View 1: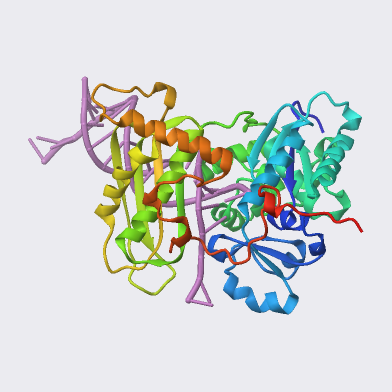
View 2: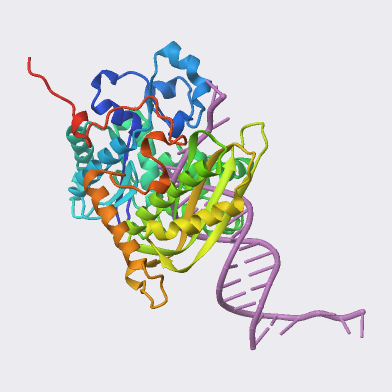
Length: 427
DNA sequence: TCTGGGGTCCTAGGACCC
DNA sequence: TCTGGGGTCCTAGGACCC
């Protein structure tokens, strides 16, 4: 098959579950699930668990019987570990291509240039074996002329043992055989709604979709769907993004370990999320004009329901935590109602401008610069000594946050905490 | 008892303007 | 009784991704 650009995607297999195995090899070949925050639902499964029919997003309490029966190893999400291993995977991939787009915590697109035509598949295999050797993580690699086809190849590489983890579509004159193997719901860009629509119209495989009339697609799936169809036909519409664009909005929110009823408890949690979100914003060198606070009860519970949100606009762009806090608290005061069991709150920062364009004005409150300086200093300290080495009292004492996440089955911070470093003992 | 969190893009429809 | 047409901007909601 011909084409100009060559796009590979490297995707870690069962990433979180595989991360848990890296420092605990006894788990190889054993079933593993990783749970969401608060140990709520299943968000990662090893192959053994997939084989048992346990689905993504399944509430943990519903599978407890199976867990016992099959001795499934259960882990709370250890994002510190996963994030650190992810960074190492990405660094490894960057030794294989100057153009790498980190697409998610466990996937990256690579442009493959300057490798002899008949050595490319070998090169992809080398990527796979290197990540395995350096980090102990299994990956699958797919390559094609567009991102969508690379994803499709990756999917087959992962699912069909005969490919042994690597599928390079450029090796084949006719790739329709592969498009025919992939059901529409497995195509990148086709979600639940669109796959239902396509099935209703008797469009079953990627091949069927690729043949569809453009007008029909545009009308029912917007230009987004149209792009997918073009990409399936080998015409690139989605470029590799070498440097990640700055975020346009930043959310920080979480479900609580136990329900909250008191304003002051909720206020602490909101303050904490303001600290997290603004920290993230500062790291991309933005300031914002707007914060939205939202609050809700548990929609799955058969108790009085409440959801509300309030936006506060700032008089000037802000990025310091302590400047933002009073606005957030006032927004919360507007929407907080007594008598509900709150399950989740969060904040949303929007309407960004680059920090370099923020002007300090004559009419600013007198201690404004001090507040900014304090926040900057805290960021530096926390970067060096770890999150929340310094933090605002408004977020509540770390040790007694009633709203903290439940994480009962957390593994060690093997790579990021000295006391958790694995030891190798000589016999 | 127990149901994640963080993003993006697109469209339709309303408000407003000339 | 008749009640334009075209443009822009904003927002809410819906689709998708991991």
